[in-house]
Length: 165
Image (spheres, rainbow, N blue to C red):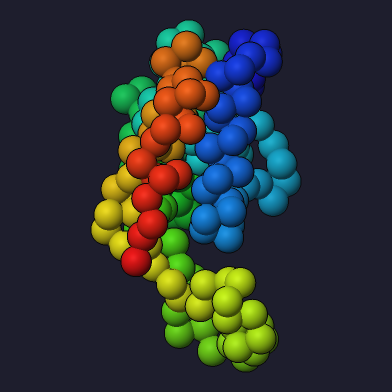
């Protein structure tokens, strides 16, 4: 929707994937402190690479962050990196990592009181769940609406039917 502005079932699928990630990870997949379109687009490119044309060329602020190939710039003003590569697979692998060694007593108390409702802080996805989750999200988060998995396929996907240990 950021580039073609037309809501479709495909944009709903993108939003559903972002919501699923947030529910499973406890953090947003794409988040902006200032909620600017450029900040969100930067994070999307960090996760999935260069946007397809004509979107890549239409994104006016892309040279601030990326080279023409969609890779983060190597030289930065004041040596402050403004973009990194952070693929979806790495983001999924990092689920639960922010909780580890947090020493957060409030989280530990919450865990004790709700042990049957919530996962323990620091719970990581099993390799099988991580693979299935990545597969589903990648199919839902394709750049072009028409290339995304359909709702019936989402409903039947292994990530929604498997029980992971």
